[in-house]
Length: 458
Image (tube, rainbow, N blue to C red; front, side):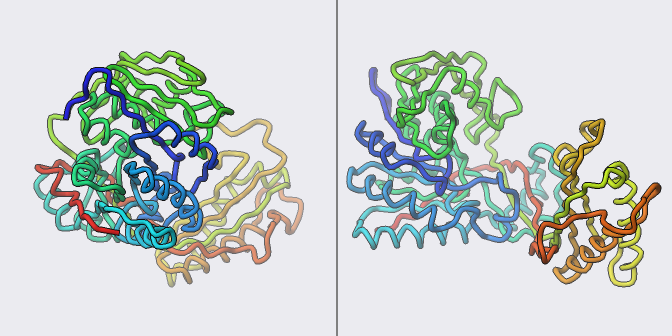
């Protein structure tokens, strides 16, 4: 289908992530403009690998349901397609199933009837192992070299879909599309590409819209953004009159989470932003031109897989004594040696992870910056222990905490009081710890085969 001259397509982004909330008045203003699509992202890897590995969501179901219900009812009433990407938080099978259960509860409560498309994103370990043996996998960023053991240890592996499966779902007459792990921009780029609009413009618009009104001033991922795409440009503006988009705010969001200011990458290819222009338009809107899509030489998808690497226990303490603050390096070293020696009969040293996160000194930056001089008056200390079982992690932490509390260091003038604990009990069991064992690009001969579209009547 070709986008005719003068044809425009309008879309609504509910918020930066389903569950973050948005003013209903903003949605009502957006709906009054008769959008062609409503979209929302429902997940992310930002909270880390735990949620993918454990199959849990990082936004409460009650919050997600609160956000979804008015949008779903409006979409069905107005016969406007609704697209949700990375359903349930991480987009794997348990996330998708939990999201669909919530969707059906809302539909039943409101007596809604619609054609639903579900797009799973799970990838079998056997598929990844085959690609590994054939040399079709490459690290994404600074990922470690992949081994068969890493792949087999993953509880869930997903691939990030682009626009192609969403287009198939919409072409199949879906009124509601619920996708597993999905590139954020694809949620909004699929409909314009389906209608023949320039894919570079469509993907750039999707990149801006994925976080709701975060590209506006004041920025906020908890508000509605409206985007309109035409033959040579697109426009974005917030639905809330208390916010404005500016050329600077929209240009800045084009760089969001990207290492290169001139481009970003999607399964469709490289989106070249080097010739983009941003200009104000109307009341609080911005017009954008110039994005160009450079197709890839070989189709590839990003894989995400998480495996359990142990169990966590933590304690939080405050350090006020200036002598202790000056000698935290020595204190940490002594505590680690004491703990390792005391547990040598039950736990080899290479199975213990014991970290001292020192907020106020280098808790965020680590060794990337020099320590402040003079030292701060107070330091927040998080002692983090990871071991093969929860019992062992708790045991490591209790020993580290009690040792640190009384550990000697040169120049010490007191016999106790290294640490001040804000909570009793001081120790917290954190449960299983996951890491991204698979975080790689996989070349694929057929993208569509990875993402089957399942149609249902709700």
